[in-house]
Structure formats: structure tokens, C-alpha cells
Image (tube, rainbow, N blue to C red; front, side, top):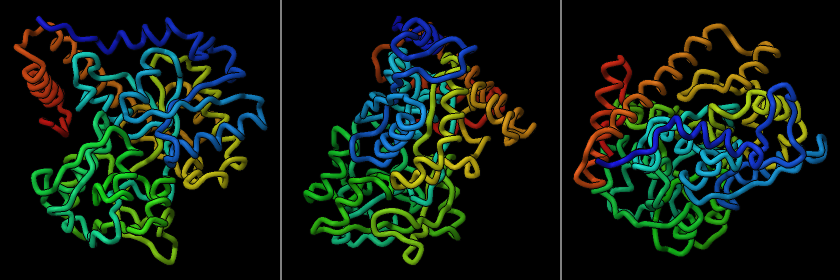
Length: 389
């Protein structure tokens, strides 16, 4: 019988290593002098934003923010699971897909994670496919036959391209998949003519590098009027929304792109992280907004006025406490949050059952988890979203 790590153990790990993470008594409701976040690679939009926020924390509260760059969703999430960092400016992979136990998070050392959000960045940027201008890709459909980056260990990046390909009735068999070890390497692959397309934020530092490279930059459109295309896209990525991108490399209010996006980064944590710590972090992000909003591309998305409180992962109780204090948390959000927490319970119970089963090998174990997960969610009246990957 194969043994699987239960998601509930992650909470124990987080508490056991609370000293390293700076997790402390809820009564304090303040940040420690030194704090750690994980984020995307150096040069990414999320990393740049985290550094700008760190400067504001240092200047106004004397808090030193250490930002740990991670190549992929797993490397960004491990420090949180192990209690070595309390927060991450993560992507949809380290939040939604970690919650769902999908892709790398469906492996034997992971399983569904009890993640929570604090704030979502809803900027004027897009999170979509970037292409070299000389590849002549005008729409998602034009990706057929092109070289497309696949980042090993980054389920969010890869699933997002999968969903965007589905918009045009394409899949990975219709493109040339080129593997890279990290986000930065994939973006450099466009510059170096190793690949034609990759997934990124329009405000990523790497996107600006592509724009200034000899190949140039282009953003394939995702037409908002194509209802069937959007139905296929959201079946694989329910966190996506139609959006006119106006911020980033090659974009402006005068040169918008009809595309698709979702919140990025997501300032997230684990359920076990102390509510006082989360309260203090949320409060600092909101109250220091004017100090960092113009300090990095996309930082405007952290504005409290742009927040979505009923997204696809639950909000941490510490953040909710602050949102109630400032009057932005509505009673209906309690219901949606409770449903999301219930979903995590269904997934955790399914994973526990999965750990008691016997499988011939890792491939069989993954297939078994996929079926068990889908069956458990369906029985609970919840949409599985993905049934195979």
C-alpha cells in the first residue's frame, strides 16, 4: 500500500515551525521585525511587486520583508507548508490548484492543501499567452503548430495555456510542446528563438525584455463575444474572466488587447497561520497602499476597491476580521466562504481515503486520485472542474 501525506499534517508543520515563519500569538496583531514571502522568479511582476511592498513596510513600519523567488508553484508553496514562510505572492497554481490537489499537488507528497487568501491583485494587466511578434500569432487559434512552452513543476502556467488552447478547440497535441525548468527560462526561450509562445503576465519584467528583443512581442486575442470558446476555457479554468488589458509590455489605454485574466498575484497563506499575523499583514497591505501603488507595474491591483471576496479559495479568518472592521465584508461572503471551506473538507476526506488504497505505481495512484476526487466532489454536489490531467 502506498502512503500519502495527509493535508491536515501541513497545519501541524506550519505550527511546529512557527518561529522561523514569524507566526505568533493572535493577541499581538502586528508584524514581526523580519518577515518572509515567497514569490515568482526574479524579474516577474509578482516579485517586483513584493519588493515594492517590502520597501513600504520598511519605510513605514520598520519591517524587513525577505522575498524568496521560486521557479514554480511547488517551490513557492513548500516554504509555507513547512512553516518557513507565512505568506506567498503566489499564482493560481499555488492557491486554487493546491487547494484542489491537482497536477503536481495530486502527487503522493502533497494532496489538497488548506490554503487561504488575504488579498487578490486585480490589475489592468492580462495573464495570458505571450508570443513573439515574428511568429505571426494574432489569435489563440493561430497557435496551432507553433512551439509552446511547458514549465516543469508549474501546473498553473501549463493549465492556463491548456485552458486558453481549449478556447480555440486546440490542445497540446496541436502544438509543439517545449519543456523548460522555470518561468524565466521559458520567457528567455522566446527571446532566444527556442519557442514561440509562453504564459505570463503582461507586466512581467520578462515581457518587457521580449518587447525590446529583435523578435518583438504580441498578445493573441481571446474574443469576448465567443461564448462557446469561453465555455470551453472556463470548464478548465473557472478562475478566468474576460478583460481588456491596458497595462504591460506593448499595451496601453490607447492600445488595449481583448483578452483573458485572473487575479495575480494572490497574497495567500495556510489555514493554520495565526489569525493575528494575517490580520496585521492584511491591514498593512491596505493601509500602506498609497506608499507602494506606483512603485511597481500592476500594484494598483491591490487596491481594496478592486478586491473580490468570493473567488475560488476561501479567505483567511484574520483577513475577514479586518475586512469587517473597515466595512467591506458583506454577509453573503460568509456563505460563499463557508462553501469553499466545505469543499476543502470534502477534498481532504477524499485524500485520506486515497491514502488507504493500494496502487501498482505512481501512474495508477494518480489515476485513482483523479477518479476518487471527482466522485467525492460530485457526490457533495460540487463541480469537479477537472477530471483528468
